[in-house]
Image (tube, rainbow, N blue to C red; front, side, top):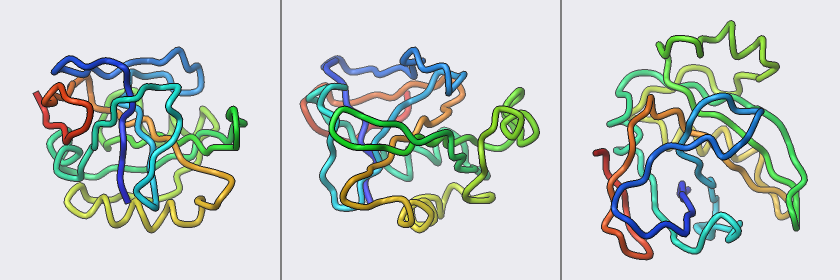
Length: 156
């Protein structure tokens, strides 16, 4: 599994953004979760930045929860929208997220095991007609990249 952030921005620093999405009320690093390594949705940008498990661990080394937000119709197919939220973020506890109508689909996942556990959860959502987008709550932290068209990100 790969987590890919798409953008047309070729600078070195990438900040979490709102994306104008009312269903996710926080600034996030938006990624596509791919089961086969290929990403889609070039409308978000041609540049591909890989978000690794170690980067997510650097945002928060404790427990994370994956929340199902909604299923939407895209341009060519349907996609699932999720939010990956670390435990302990004020205003984004389980009670508040349940009130939003979100559904916890993972239970607590320790950051060091997150990528494998995340893949196990998402496996039941992937098929040839759907894909997954995830809003990662970074607690306001951005990422640093090489500035090239492809590459791995790190915390800054």
